[in-house]
Amino acid sequence: MDDRGRRVAPGRLVGRILILGLALPCLGGCVGPKAVRYTRMKYNEVVRDTNDQQLLLNIVRLRYADSPVFIDLPNITSQFEVAGRGNYFGGYGNQTPGPASLGLGDLSFRDTPTLSYHPREGREIAKALLTPVSADLFIVVNAGANLQQLLLFSVNDINDIPNAPRATTLVPRASDDNSEFLHVIKLLTSLRDREATELAYGTDEDLDSASEPIPRGSVKARDVLNAARDGYVYRASGESQVRLVKREKVLYLRINPGFVDSPEMLEVARLFRLRPGLSKYRVRSELAEEANQKHPSPLGSDTIYLNTRSILQIMTFFSKGVCVPEEHVISGVVPTTPGPDGRPFDWTRITAGNFVVHHQKHRPRDAEVAVQYRGYWFYIASNDVNSRAALSILEIEFALQESDGKPAGPLLTLPIGGR
Image (cartoon, rainbow, N blue to C red; front, side, top):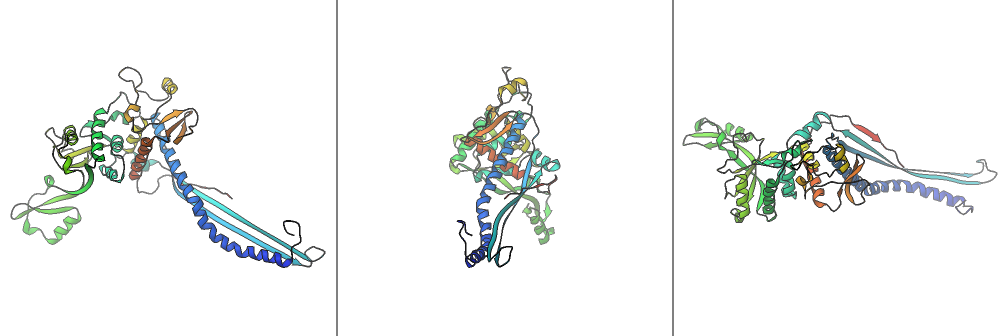
C-alpha cells in the first residue's frame, strides 16, 4: 500500500526498497562533510563565548576577593552515525490469506559529542598565574595589540615610574594613582601610531661580562664552535688576546630617524631617564640577570626596564575596572579602600577608557559577554571596543603563560548522547 492507501505492485515496492538500500551508502558519505559544515563553526563560537565568560567571571570574583577557578576544555570529540535498513516480504504465506507484498524500512541519524573537562589546579595553575610575563611578550604589538593597553595592564612600573601597583592586590589598604604612567605610555602610543617607533629583535654582546683575556693561540676551532653553540663569541682584545663574550637576542625599541629629536621622544627620554637622541633603546625585564647592577641613572641610560606583572596581578588589576553594586559596598560584601576624602575610592578610574565592566539586576540584552554573580549580571557592552580588546590581550597573555607539562588535575569526560 502506498501513502494514499492504494495497492502497490510487488515489483514497484521491491524497486523502492532496492533504491533505499543503494542510497544508504551514498547518504553516509554525505553526512560527514555536512556534519563538519553545520557543527564546526558552532563549536568554535561556543568555545570562544564560554572562554570569555569564564575569564570575565574570574575577574569579577577577584574584585570580590574570591578565588578564581579555571576549567579547560582540551578535547571535543563528536561522532556522527547514519544507519538504515529495509525488508521485503512477498509471495504466499506470511500469515496472509493470499499473495503478500509487504515492505519495511527505517533511517536514523546520531550525533554523540564527548567533552573532556580539565580543572586546572596545583603547580600547573600556580605557575601560569604567578610567573611574571616576559618582556618579549610586547613583540605582539607588531601583530596589532594595543601598546597602551598592553603596558597599562602588564607592567607595574617602567624605569621606576609606577603604574598604580596597589591595584594589583586583592584588598588594597590605600588608594593609588597612575597619571604620570598613563601620560608617558600615551606618548609612546602616539609615536607608535605615527610609525615613529617599532619593537624589533636584535643581537647584543654583553662586553661588561666578558671573560678574562685568553691567548689567541690557545683557542682552537672546536672552542669557537662550542662557544657559538652556547651563544658566545670570541672577540679580539689586543693583538694577541681574545675575550669570550655572551651574545643574546634582545628586544629593542627602534626610533625612526625623523623622530629621534621630536618633542614627544625627548619627553619620553626625560621621564624614563634615558639618554636622548639615540636611535634605539634596549627593552628588558627587571628580572633579567643584569637588572640589579644596571638601574636607570639620572644621567641617562640606553635601557628601558619593565617591572612586569604576573597573570594573577594582571587579572586583579583588570578587576579594578568592575563597577560594583552600591548595596555590596554598603554591606561590605566587596572590598573597599578609603580615598583621600574618606569615601570609598573609585578604582575604576585606574582602568578608565580601557576596561570597564557594568552591572545590572536583569540579564543585559546587548552585551558582548555577560556572567551572573552574587545576584547581579556583570557584562561588557557590545559597543565597548576597548574593553573587548583588553579582554583579548589578557587571553593572549594567559595562553603564552600556560605550562607545557601534562595536566595535573583529573580529566572529566562527559559523553552526551543525542539524536
